[in-house]
Length: 293
Ligand SMILES: [Zn+2]
Image 1 (tube, rainbow, N blue to C red):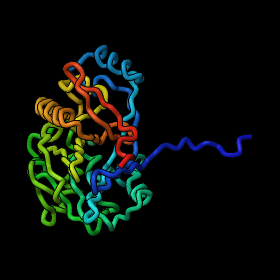
Image 2: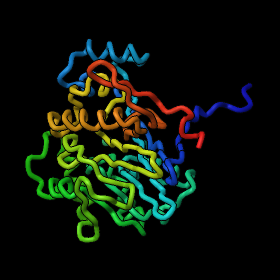
Image 3: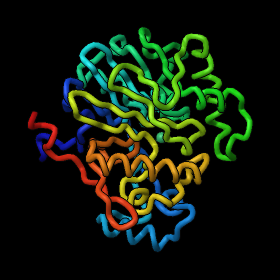
Image 4: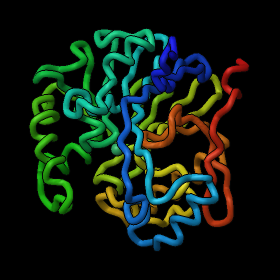
């Protein structure tokens, strides 16, 4: 008899200091898929994708697709980026409970920053029809919000996204704040143009005491495939050609400045660096660098 049956736990909260800021990543959940090809490279061959997977000791074609929201605590303000699905996906929507594990309360959040309006990034703006974060100002990219509000030229795979936007985001329209690339949420937290994955998709550059982090959001969909060849089109990119331009620009910025990066769909804790490798990049996961103070 096994006295303590293993529960197959895995880490779900990860925190580190970036200068004076505290960064928290939460594993909101994950799904498994069996279509690494074509979803990670609709313009690449199965053989190309399988070769990259093998080089990273990954199975093929099965893959895990994780959902990892980030919080930035400046000491003065608590900023929650893309707080996940919430109750719109009961299987994966573990954000609110895990926020408590991180030492925060839903009431503590001052700003909820939405990098783009896809379901895994906006679902948890409301819970049971009410705002999930009662004291937070919601911040949208101006172009992103305008695109979904207009509701024209919606990609073929996105009608459910438009429906969720109308239900979840639109009610915040008059109370929300809108930003453009280059705008600061607070000092040290700056919006970065990463358009393409969605019409106004934004990354965020974080800087405190000379330490830098790029919250890439969905600029990189798969940590191995999308970095090895940034020209691969991700099946969930709304404008794949523009997404490639943004991916190349953001990856170059991260690599050439040796800054930390976080991606919403990269393996938890989703903290690491990008190294140039041939025409692409390789993801170097964070180990203990940020623990040494
Ligand atoms: Zn996403």
